[in-house]
Image (tube, rainbow, N blue to C red; front, side, top):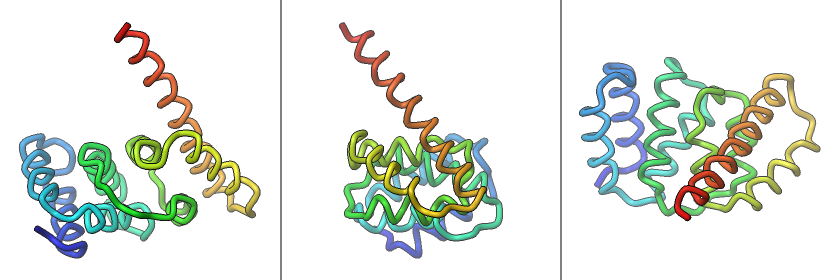
Length: 151
């Protein structure tokens, strides 16, 4: 079991060394991280979105895919995570909003976003929030289509 700092170190190393082009490495990393406490996993992976990074795109893509795949059980303040992530969020990473919905529910996630929209946001933060809203609409379509296909 790894703690938050060790998970951060391993994700950074993997993203920087292999990028997203090594599925075997990503699977091994997910397996190793998955043995850790859910709160440690969530804290570590959220940090890639809430703290300025180098190699932002690869790191966030990997962290997001791990969040969505592992679905760590953790306590977190959704509004705070969204607000902190808006400054650094890479718009190509749909897994962060998808994980938020899986963890907190679509209605609650949308409600928190609506509250955030009333805050004073920079143009970068507004763009990021619009992108999160886009991914949530896409998530709704995907889940509706999946339900339709299961009939």
